[in-house]
Length: 202
Image 1 (cartoon, rainbow, N blue to C red):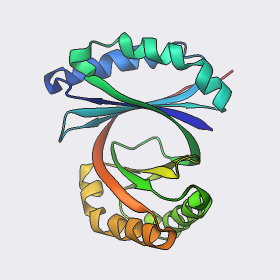
Image 2: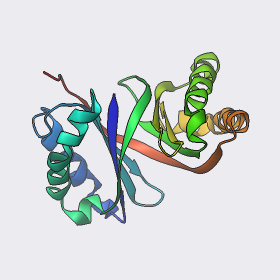
Image 3: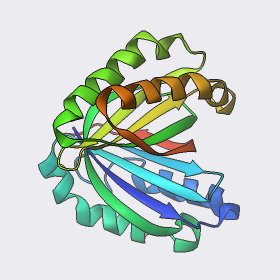
């Protein structure tokens, strides 16, 4: 599985409801982006940022959908969605997300390309043995770029309270994985899960 992740900044937070409504309308039936299996919109209250994540069965489907995804971004008023600052393609190394999530934490890790599989294994192992014990846990995504060695871990929570309570424990797990793989933790951000639309892919 592969994912296209687009980042936005400086959106008008007073237009959040309009943005969420428009995104739900555009991606609600899956027809706006052929081949897309899931579409997520994450909003960062702290810095008026946003992330859109769109998932595909393979890399070919993802690349063929790039123009449709660009059109989808353009269909949203810039004042509402913010200025697009990045677009990246990622391999989905772990996808275990439950539908009842409303908060997320995104961590950016940078390591050696040849240690990507080791990093994924350790993250999967740590989450399987420890994260499930945390109250409000709703799953995780791990996105990797094998060429650069970069990874994004996205953990999902029932709400802001659960996300906040997990802060120390998750930080400990993240530091442990980074230490064992020689990776560095570049950034950690909190988001609200505003849209999580799953589509049936023909």
